[in-house]
Length: 384
Image 1 (cartoon, rainbow, N blue to C red):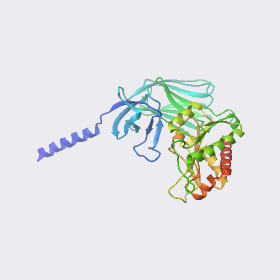
Image 2: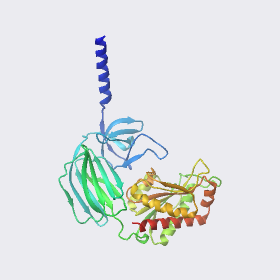
Image 3: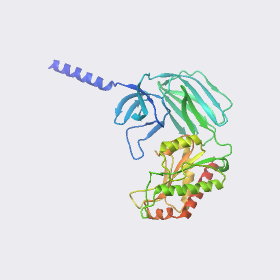
Image 4: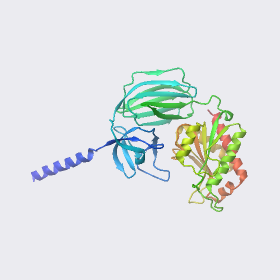
């Protein structure tokens, strides 16, 4: 009997050891706009995104779930990535050293440049009160012995780091202004670049470039009306055109993602907007629900540093005698995803509600919406 228990104990111990000892391999990011997710959950907007990543970043793969890989970012942090966005296997090691830093600026942006010996994964988080940008670099062991800071910076007030875990370096960038105007994180060689957009010297519409996105289009019809069966894609373009006209009257430079019934994917829109470098983005949509009594206007943001724009727009849209559906944060809409510029999704009203639909059909309402969105942008600019 004792021999039996001893054999059973050894078997269970070996089984437990086998379960806790995971095999792994390394891969590198590839494709258009690869991103990490917090888990394997999903809904109509996809899984909850952690961060977009640059290409060719080294990731340690520890598990596989249908279309996604689980990657180990650090000892205590994991994430998930679409298999189509990873080339594997590749050679690599999990931990790497940081080198010296430089904090500098050019005529448009400020930069934090961090020397590494590998393209490591990262996340970037906006913070407010005080206004800061926090970037975590996973797999990075501190070997930074100096940070060179030059006087060409105009938005970065201070930059420093904390080694929060053995394999995680946290970069803290303090900003001079309370409003976040955008940032980008990317690699040049093995140097991690954190590019910070400055507050415009003259934050008035006549000096700014505003991007206007008419939701859906082409083979993507969006929602349809509850009585008229109108298509969302057609009416978002009508609202967007009126918004363009109202902004042009204020002498703003306006960029349209589409000006006719064009099929454009979300990655195509994002890549186009990144090339155009707008100061703000407003995306126009019309809402819909299976419950026909639900109605009202709503605005959406993903990053806390851009919330103030969405709040100002909602404030003025409520002047149109629309019910309030709300201001929605952490929203996983693709055009709320870029961190490069403040952005807001405006769901004007519900096509699925008879009362809202009646407003949507009225050309006078299109002009009124455009006027209120412009007023919201101006309020946002006045509160800087």
